[in-house]
Every structure is written in C-alpha cells, then in structure tokens.
Image 1 (tube, rainbow, N blue to C red):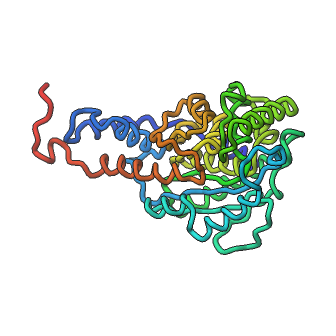
Image 2 (tube, rainbow, N blue to C red):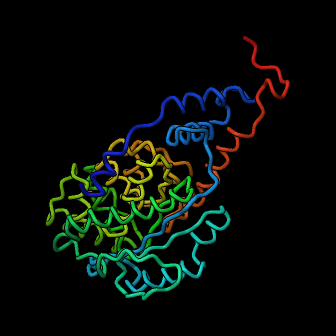
Image 3 (cartoon, rainbow, N blue to C red):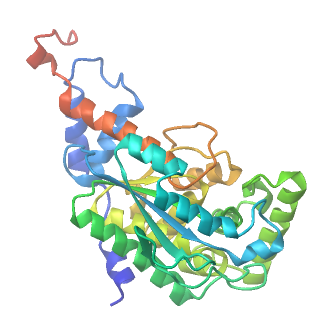
Length: 351
C-alpha cells in the first residue's frame, strides 16, 4: 500500500467531545459567554483537531519552493531566476517569512521541490526535488500522476518528521515564480469558477498581463481537461511540485491531528487538492488570512473556511501563517490561563 493511501485512510473527523469540553470550559471563564468571539471559536477548533485542550508551543512553517514551466507564457513580472534567489534569501533569514516567524517563535523549514536553478547543498535546505520545475501546463500536463503522488508523500514525510519531535501547529508557505497561474488553474478546475474570476495580478503584471494570465489558464484547462473531482488529476495536469508538497503537509496534519495554518492563494490551492482527496481533512485546516488574490476568496468559500485575518497581503512564503501563530497562541492562552468565575470569586450571570 502506498504511503498516500495509508495517509488518506488515517484521516478522520473532528473530536466533538474535546470541542464540547473546550467550549464548556470557556463558558466558565470571567467574561460573558462567547464575548471573545472568533478567538473562542479558534480555541474550540484547535481542541477539536488535537483532542485535548488547545496548545501552541512548537509551531513549524514549511516554505516549499519550485518552478513552473508556464512562465514561458509570460505570466510573471519577475524572471524565473528569482525562485532560486529567494530560496537563498530564506536560508539567510532575510525574507518576510523569516522576520515574522522569528517574531512568532516559529521554526521555518525550507525545501526545494523543483527549483529550476540547481542550488547545490546549502546549509539548511531540504532537498525534495522532482525535476527542474514542472512542464508548461499550457501545452500539456505539468507533471505525471506518479510525480504528483510522490511529491505529496514527500511533503507528508517532512510534516511527520516535525510532528514526531513535538510540532503542534504546522504552517504552509511557498515560493515559485508562476505559481499564482497554477493556483488559478487549480481553483477554477476544483470549484468550477471561471478563470477570469480566480486570476489576479500575481507579482504585479498589470491589466494586460492579467488578461494574458487568464488566457493561459483557459488554455491549460482546455488542453488538459482536469477532472475537478480527482485531486491528483488536477494537481498533475495544472499544479506544481511545491503545491503537491503542501498538500502532503495538510494531509499529514489532518491524519496526525495537528492543526494546519493555510497561508495565501497558493496554499489555498493546495488545500483544495487536500480536501478533494480527503474531505474530512478540512477540519484540521485554518485559513490564516484572506489574500488579495481574487481566487483565494473563491477557494476559501469552497472549503467552508473563514479567514482569521484580512490584511490585503499577497506575498506567500508563509507570512500569513506566521501571523496566525499569534492568534492561535492567544486562543490557547485564553483557554488555559483565564480565571473561572469560581476561582476568581466573581459572581456569574444571574440565572
């Protein structure tokens, strides 16, 4: 049996008893019931995933990098060389995700899932290469189904490794010039939305560039005819290696009952694939924020996930996931550290 098959078989639904107990405890704290709004909801959801009182002490953010053959269609404002250059920036600790992760006390794991430029073996880089980027999806399948499966399994294995050493929150991030085009194609294929509604400006291509991106997404869907009900088919035909790896992280989190912070649009596309493969995985996914990319709102609506932040961000890398760590910690602290009416000697509500 393949690792992916075992992984999917291990995914179950939320722990409703743990969720109910978390809500019962929150209702005994020195505040009007539900007065902390979505912070309480977050605490309850964290408990429902893990099956215990919420705790966020060892968050890990995965930033996976890969290139995309579709850049040959002129869909990005930046050259493909930027992918490798940004990986080096991640490893030096100089990128936005590094800054925000340090501030949140989160570890960042950077992995090469298929960067076009060979990076050698720099310290701190995890190699999970599946080739020098995907093929041009506007001319045919981006990768084989076997590659898609193997890349998912590789991402899951990395997640399993950190979970085994105590990680209790997984964040998802990425880097790859051209990957908003792949995310738009995935979102259109899975949700049935028109490409024009899910394709944005990405790296800042302008109105003409966006129109070109929309045309490329339409062509990729016409050429490949991905089956929106088959996550592996969509991923192989119009996805990316880094998106596959993030799908694996999400599935592993769901299977091992560890919450997963879904970053922006590209991570949202990976979440669509994960939920297509295992619908029950949705309960372990937390929408860290809503990206300014229009396709992200469509993806989140399809997944039934409400974002916790909306800061007009569209960078990726795991930046939104890093910010979410603070909210998750706050929710866990409220649950674990606030006094109850009884312990504080405060009168409760009048019956």
